[in-house]
Length: 490
Image (cartoon, rainbow, N blue to C red; front, top):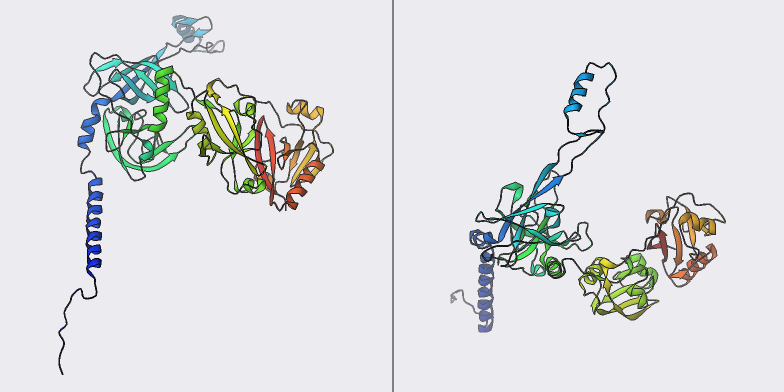
């Protein structure tokens, strides 16, 4: 019996497989090395690089004096003589003593964007200020003037006159900032001055309360006084302007927000050129397309912006109609209302742009010359939902409705040409109630067709059922604001 030697060898591996494994191993090592380099050992070089460009901002505001009537002291009171002497000595008018005016100070941060002295900060840092003082890292102080402000994005542009060129910092592309990237904030938290904090990008495209919000969320420590300061990437580029924090106690809990640089740069360019913003204006009222709305109008996906009203303006001139869904603007698809508002606002005033709308199951191409939002006149209607008289009522879809008459139009503040159904009651157990329909609302369209009677509404409901729709789209008006609501028909 002969024995066989057992050896470990790549007997079952071809040379090509070994070569592939070698390359994969090398790639893995390089990837791990790159990841290791992505974590900075220190932020000191970056802090030194940008420190001369970040400024502390101190503002002073005169708080007006207040005056009021003299305190009333009952006759015979033991304090009567004391208060009479006090009033005689106190400065003021015949109505009583006047408090002295006082100066109020506030602190914030900012950063230099040009050698000739332009500085960016938050609007709320300098709003209402009589004096604005800029302190640089080297201790130099200079007064600043306001070039322009934009409350909608909370951005302000200042200017100082310096004998020597200042050291600016560049803006970076905020769209390239990824969740998990390292960022660094520098500013004047709680008046401490030129303080550095570091963290990561926690989230992107956050919206707080503004129309044009596009915030970067970060866990880098941001406190009061950091407002207006820069949020840097690791290349020393500004990717955001620190604006707000979410906090139950006023201090940092690791949830801070910086307005993205791609929003800020557009605002700054306009403030520098015009001293004000000039945003594009389409002239429509819109709402998001929900799944049930999409189903009710035959739209395949719940995307785009549903037009609820078209007042006089660019869109109306181009033929847009209430009930249209804007699915494309200037050649790019529209995901929702927020995206549309931002893109229209960023568009050039006076530019003619192609707009695609979904209407009656087809796409319609429009060409719209944009107006200027700041100059657009609002078209509010004054409607009150109180004391709607009841007449010829009908119950449909959990809603009690009554045709509009002249008396109801007058009470609701509607013009004589408005037809529809006034909502007089809503079943609290119905989906109509859950979706916010209330007494005093006016239904002017159903299934994207105008209605004037309960019979019209019933006919539209039957048409929706026959077409296999699960819901019907209603156009509701309340206090001058129209919105679409989809209600189930089965």
